[in-house]
Length: 193
Image 1 (cartoon, helix red, strand yellow):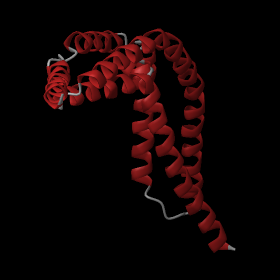
Image 2 (cartoon, helix red, strand yellow):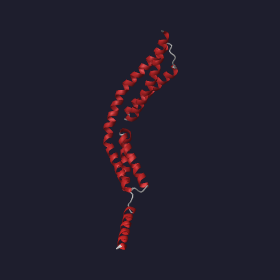
Image 3 (cartoon, one colour):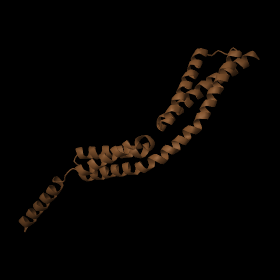
Image 4 (cartoon, one colour):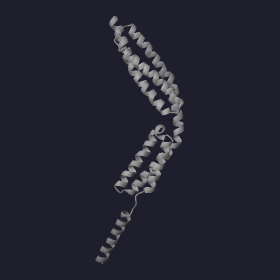
């Protein structure tokens, strides 16, 4: 009786070892996920649906990491998730791109207005003899004017993401420079009183 129990237990253990030891890596699922990611990237999902595209990349990396430690079941699920995220991203590209284009078109006059205000502030600061680095500020304004031409070219060429990123950067730079100018003008006005 004991021998039957032990031999049954050995057979059961060998079956489990064989079942899990013979599991194969989810090669096909990983390949499908890689293809889906490549297609999503080709359709610019990496630029216009960054959050979902990043989830797809992270899931694919997770799948490959799990394969390395022979956790094939979890790797298969991660590869399937990667493919799913990549496929979800594709139809989101065009609406997101159109939305971003609208935002760029709305930001251009705003940034142009800020640039004009900066020119006025520089003139005001010079008139009040405020301590500013005129050459540096004028150089920045000149650079922003060139950047604005580039933004418009990028918009024309449907490179919306680049135009958007450049405008956001310009806005931040202008905001900082504006604060410096306003503070210098106010400080000079307060000193004259």
